[in-house]
View 1 (cartoon, rainbow, N blue to C red):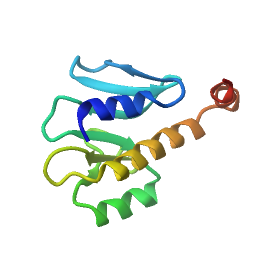
View 2 (cartoon, rainbow, N blue to C red):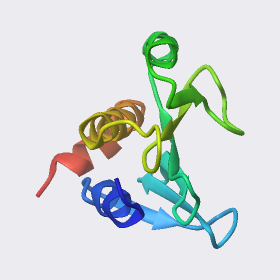
View 3 (cartoon, one colour):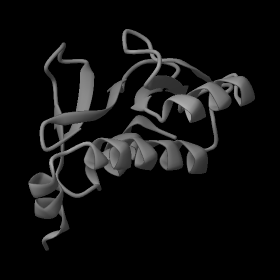
Length: 120
């Protein structure tokens, strides 16, 4: 997956925005103010931090060398995924993990905010 593909995919979700609260090089993708992905898009290899169900996070780390505990994140709830370069996960699996992260964050939003996302 290329940095442009990762950015486009993250921004394709309903109400998703890209912000730079930490450094100009670190893209933070949020939905209604809550982070679901974080990446230095110009880094080699391309990596992205994604929220994950704690039990699935452990299983994914055991199954894939390209998935590690979240760098500078709560390691119970976040994974760092190698999305580009040698040893990267398949694009399909990266997209699945990004979508799961977005869905987990949305599920944690207050009901009124979730309902706002469902409106066209």
